[in-house]
Length: 125
Image 1 (cartoon, rainbow, N blue to C red):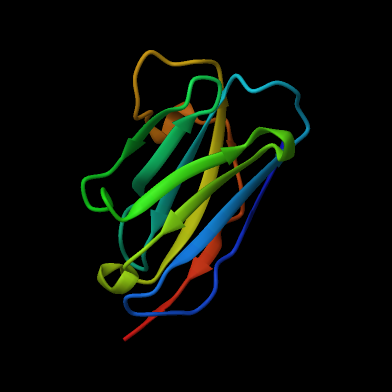
Image 2 (cartoon, rainbow, N blue to C red):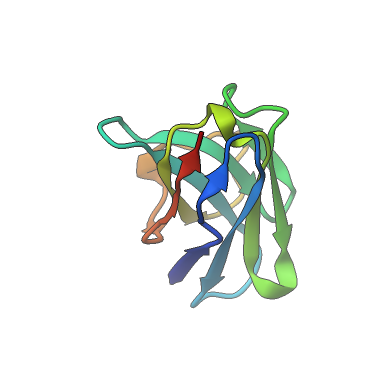
């Protein structure tokens, strides 16, 4: 299983950005993709996740109404649309995957078996 995040780039405060998580090395859509971010000197924070097979989603309170997770099953890709980024600390965003269809979200970081290398999202004021 290989996960590749992309889309991270310098964005101005108040701007928008879409991150992509392209997954490969497996077939089917019974998996959960999570987005986790980590700012310098801070602990990892779960941002959003999606159960791809049934479209169940979850968002952290800090991003509700501003971030949207979506999917392209044909491309095995999950996206994170981020709007109004001026309140975000510069962070590295990671995507992670675990297989199965959970009854509820979010999952714990330990539940994810596969992680990407992350993509940086700097926010300029």
